[in-house]
Structure formats: C-alpha cells, structure tokens
Length: 184
Image (cartoon, rainbow, N blue to C red):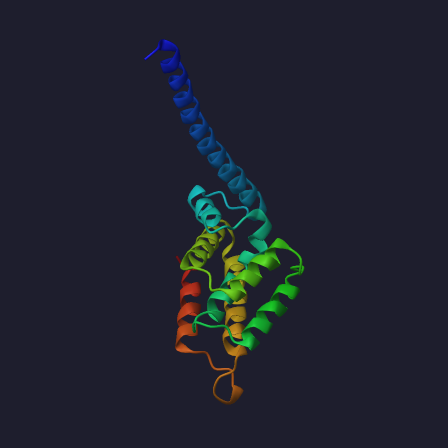
C-alpha cells in the first residue's frame, strides 16, 4: 500500500475519533448548562440532585411543574387517573399560574396522559431533600403540609364509596412515601 493511501486512512480515522469526542464534549457541556440553569431557577447546588433532576428531564423551564409531581403521583397510584382527579390537577395548574401553552403545561399534559416512571418521584424527593437542607424548619413544615394537603385533595377528588372522598390504600401509600421525603 502506498504511503499516500495510508496517510489518507489515518486522517479519516483521526477525524472520526475527534468528531465523536467533540459530540461527547458538547453533550457534557449541554448537561452542565442545563444543570446551572436549573440550579439558578430552584436554588439547589447539589450536583447529585441536579443530575437526577436533569436525567428526569426537569429543566429550569419545567421546575414549576415539579411542584405538581406529588399530585401526579397520587393520581396515578391506582394505575389510572379518574376524571375528577384530572380536573383537580388542571385546576391546581391554573392556581399555580401555569399557562396553557407553556412548556410546563405540555409536560403536565404528558404526565396526565401517561404515567411517568418512578424516576420522576425520585427526582422530586431529591429536590425536596435538598430544599429541606437549606430552608428553615418552619418553611419546610409549611411546604410539607401544603404538598400533603394538596395530595390528599387529589386522592379524595374521585370520591370513594357514595362520593365521600375516601383515600385508597395505594393512594395513602404514595402520600406516605411523599411525606418521607421531608424527613429524610
């Protein structure tokens, strides 16, 4: 084989290697930028928590939707969302000021259509634990009560026997799991 042919093959191989390395570095840079924006939006500084949030596709734009995760988790506890639960969650989004065309609302609508995976609740727990580590005890307790009260409202929305608003065992289990995030 000629030296010219080998030289050309070497250049192609080097270019291929460096192109792959550039793609990997660009992906790392994108993730770093996403984590920095998320940190700025929610005040979390823990790299582990930020990584869990970004791996769960939570961004600075969707951090507001993260506050609705407990409602989604409770609504899906029975394996399906009742119309009353869906309506109650949509009402909560309006109260939170989430606009119908926003990225947050699109994400929420996706969660209402298809149950998110357990990594979403895990990311939410990490968020709450990081927040609890930096907030006052009173603020954490207020947040805990607010989150759990809203979760119970969603759990009761579909009614129980004769519409008396009972909470199923699976919904109560999810509520207990959510509560544990505040004391971890």
